[in-house]
Structure formats: structure tokens, C-alpha cells
Amino acid sequence: MYVPWFTTPETEKKVLQIVNLSPNESVIEKLTDVHPMKQIFWASIVQVCVFGFMMLSFAIINIFVQ
Image 1 (cartoon, one colour):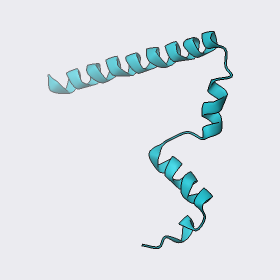
Image 2: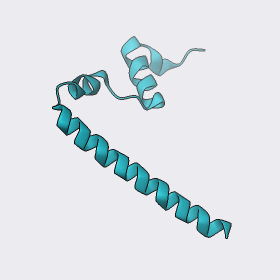
Image 3: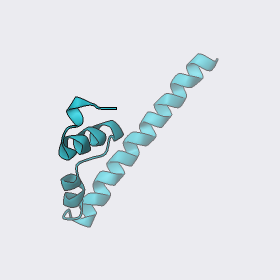
């Protein structure tokens, strides 16, 4: 199947990154340059946000189940 916007390999790669929600490689390479304590700090922030979203989801599900 021919898709006109897949004409170049670079365009195909960008479209697949968007579809797969994968970050650009330069972003991943920058992560290794960050100080380890800063990585731990941001990972902790993300973990607290995910936990808060999970608890909010449980509360909303509990409202609709009862």
C-alpha cells in the first residue's frame, strides 16, 4: 500500500515515533547527561503523580460502583 507522506525514511521514522508515542533519541541521550540525584527527583515526582492519579481513579470507580 502506498502512502504519500511515507516518501522518505526520515518522515516514516517521525510518523512511527508519533504513533508509538516514543520520544526522540536526542531526548533519551540527554537523560544520561543529567545528574543522578536530579533523575531520582523527577522519577519521584512522576511516581507521586501516577499514585495520585491511581487513587483518584479508584475513588471515581468507587462512586460509580456503589
